[in-house]
Image: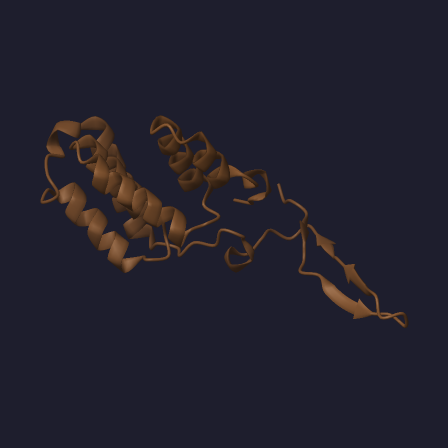
Length: 151
């Protein structure tokens, strides 16, 4: 099913120097570059690797023991290869939490939100962390306006 979208406004100046905006609504799907949260796409092979890493994390958490294990090394490789995609950073954050390194996980979460300011998952995760740390005002400032983010 296709969704309607607005194309970027076309500004026109009238005789009275006021500006009018016009929008064209189409039924064409959004292109990746048109998304507000446009992320770097991964190759199908790397998408499959990321899925395997998540499966491993969920199925065999005891194998994720240190930053030197395959889970971290593969995610770091993907992070370097796809700096415009937040998923490897998310998985690293989960990994650091699982090996009881919350400071490193927090650092990565904040990095995610800085690099991807419209990434709803990252914003909600950061707000939840700030609430857990007893900073409700900071948490609110992170998610204020989040209802306008398009994913």
